[in-house]
Image (cartoon, rainbow, N blue to C red):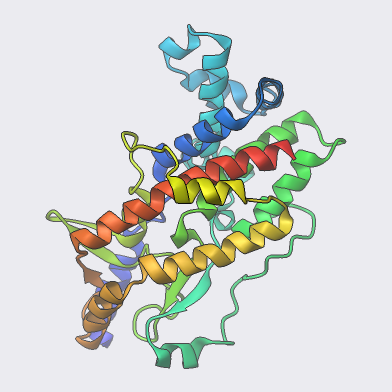
Length: 317
């Protein structure tokens, strides 16, 4: 085992954390949310967003010429979609911007999943990372996705908050709601052999696919594609019809997405392959069946739709 440590660490650090749904998925959640807002609400969020401290640098400067020469509605929708993944752009803009706006832990919460029953016996009750769903002001570093979403909603709904602060909060609400609907932003897999600190939401599980190596988190992030059909099916429509939005429901979403992760992410297939790697003292690199990948897409698309509708309700409340 000791001889494997350097290669395990190399694999660990080579896999940078992924962002939920990639840019495509976040833009789609924003587009779906935008369509649910009334024209009055659209004008309000657009006005607030233009007060963003970095609107000129990070929004206007990046606007495609075709959009900038289009209608007010086209520019407003583009900026709203841009806001949904602005927090993923922040780390690469500059050191100063990263220091001021980057909040790495806000994107996830690591509710535990265990590779084996023995792992659960070892870890259960002995994990010290932040799994609280309670937010108490102020907004700060080291919050998890649930706490950060609740905190930014408080800013958004605060009539005394400055428009610039509301604009930043708007970006985070758009983004974190999308993050929360990607199952691997809710959980981490723990194992005594490889993942004593968790698998970082699947980032530390290498996936071989078509001759290339990715990771489990990236596989799920990439499941929604721009050419997918995001028309709600009957089951999704029923969920939307009965969806009630408040702070308690955000905690309920976490519970729902833990169950999704247990059922569709850390499947028996994945666990079996991973356990074999662990038993053979090999790096945690596996392949996934076509059935697994097809199911991931079937889960991801309704999640993007749900996130979009829920964003609209959160902003309107």
